[in-house]
Length: 432
Ligand SMILES: [Zn+2]
Image 1 (tube, rainbow, N blue to C red):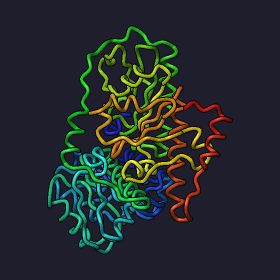
Image 2 (image 1 turned 45 degrees about the horizontal axis):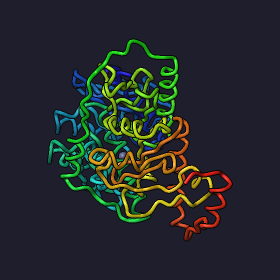
Image 3 (image 1 turned 60 degrees about the horizontal axis):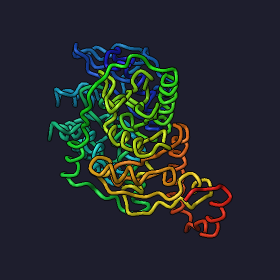
Image 4 (image 1 turned 135 degrees about the vertical axis):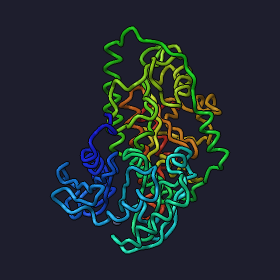
């Protein structure tokens, strides 16, 4: 989907649906705008149900001040306008009150983005604007002042209010919004079970430098029916995983073995919400399908398939409950309910950097006996004998993590005992 080629009114509808559908704004809260090439500002209307907006509900404020549309513009239009005046690079503004970020806004703190390298890069530096009356020029000035401090600032948290993102286009603003909200949730979940460890500047830089695989290209003569079917299944599961919030729009890597010498893998940096089977990349004899960019962990996937003939599918994901265990020293023990133990077994945790600097060790750690591995400050890696098997295992991992985190509020966990585990091993014929 070429989002940026859509007319502004359609972009606003799609993005508002996406934000509302995710529970990142309420019916009355949240507003978006786009500044077009004419200098006209397109904005969502005020006091209209955000769950059922159409393109005709959008309001256009012409450069000369004329207002076109059947509704009034959002009451927060004044700060949208201020932002466009303050920074010429900003062409889209997104404002909402998502719960995790509001938690930070009411304690007047900025979430720590250095916990994950990719999150830190997407979010950049973050400002914190002083409290101001909603809809007032004063609030607009306070927000614009934060944006004026540094042209790398695209996200500003508002004290006792919410967040404002200003970016070159609406999709980039959305990515930053989704990522900072995700980051806030990670911080909150981590703090329930321990303390999130931050990466150093050097570690963040190293990750960016290391993760640029250089592969030769090949032009596929044809794609087998099996490969086409696997591509279709993969695209469906990725879209589902994205809707379940198992990763953000640009995270999440899926791969599936096709034969001994080839596998298919997700593309780098393509929106997971609308991923199409044609976007998926074939890797054959270590070469990539011409004209496409595979996920950056492609070499790790290849190494795992070469090392383990029994593994057919791999998923790298970043769900916000599992990740709390990858960010803190809290141990992840699957001996909570039999289903978790049977699906996940022992879940090893390996250091940050394992996906790119020590991939051999990681490839030797994962197996069908230990099919889930946590990588500190990075991801969870899940193996399966099929993609649906790996996906199911990822969901079980996330649900188990969520239960453990939630249990902190109700009492102390009683783990399944050693004797009970032995009984499960025997009854379910689990390999050691
Ligand atoms: Zn607001």
